[in-house]
Amino acid sequence: MAGWTAQKPRKVVYIDGEMRTADLVERAKFLGDSIKGFDPDTAWANLEVHSRQDQRPEVEFYNICDPETQDAICDHLRKSKAELVILDNLTTLAKVVDENDSAAMGPLLDFMHKLKRDGIAAILVHHGNKTGKAYRGSTAMVTTFEVVIGLVKPENATFEETVFSLTFEKFRGKRSEAIKPRVFSLDGSGWQAKADDGDDVTRLLRAIETCEFTNQQEAGASLKFDKTKTSKLLARAKKEGRITAEQLKACFEAAFGDEDVPL
Image (tube, rainbow, N blue to C red; front, side):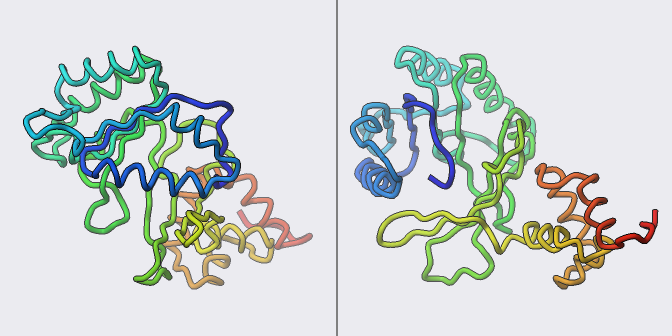
């Protein structure tokens, strides 16, 4: 889906601290029907769900900041030969006194380290802050993460739509088409994905790649971006590996033609 594929089926343990099990199953089936070539028998045979709402009231559910809970989860993952654990979500699975306190994130980071040492991939779901443009809490929580993905509502989306833009805020690894922004939307046939053509970084890079502008300010001005916004967008593009300084220089030189490019 969305250009992403798996080389082979992987055993996944999904730990949910909020939703009803029936709702989780319904959503999983609906998502599966949206994926081309989806094999439900193989998928369900490799998916194990642990839901808070599926436990008896007196049962203490997971607290992933508790060392004993961490060891119990790791032990289960090893015995079940799981290769991926999905933790959904931080607020409902971790007892953190203050999410903005970097020291309070220590136990969580310890758990992430344990999973990494066991060779188990982890996806930790967390809510955004009030701006909706960044995650909530201290930046310390993502120091060990290889990838940070943000889900943001597109500016042109209407209230009735179920749609979000996915961007890679942090990525350690080889840059490729796989990490370019995408827009996901939900319709009667399931989830649909396409390139995020409305992304400001993409729009700026497309303007530059026309080789019609002699510098970044001209390219930004063509999109009504001021100097500061243009600089920030290009810095983000370089960080994401979407363009290099050499590629920028080549585009600007092409706009000058045979003239000398000012230094």
